[in-house]
Length: 126
Ligand code: HEC
Image 1 (cartoon, rainbow, N blue to C red):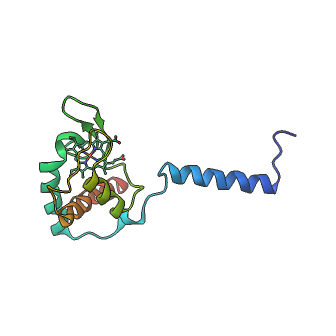
Image 2: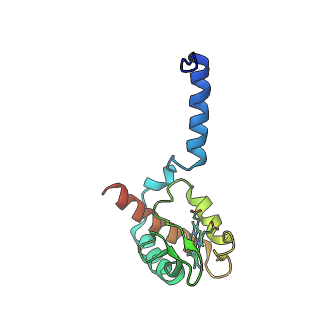
């Protein structure tokens, strides 16, 4: 009896599972595969190396804040939308991720996100 689940319980479990997967970011944002302007990707790559690589690594696959905690991979971060990623960069996150609101224009941050997305797409195609 404990292992027999009827139709209704099954649906409840599926809904719960979907919510858990969504919360974990298991579903990729549709923005991941959006077509990017190559000039923006290139500009974003240079900005990324100047502003982000020292913590997140030259290939954006994670690194360490100098003398501090780990900085997560940005390439594996396919869940959030472009807009959410831009907000994170503008505001900073936690204690170790600084805000870039005064250092980078929104368009520059958008180019950095274009660059990160190009790395994500390259990985999906691997
Ligand atoms: C001084 C080190 C440092 C620099 C420079 C830095 N980051 Fe971060 N970043 C971090 C750390 C540490 C975290 C994790 C913060 C936390 O969750 O507490 C993080 C988190 C993030 C997140 C959220 C990732 C997640 O898994 O939730 C994004 C997106 C991000 N950084 C993008 C960038 C971009 C783009 C740049 C360059 C404009 C940048 N970061 C520059 C240290 C840095």
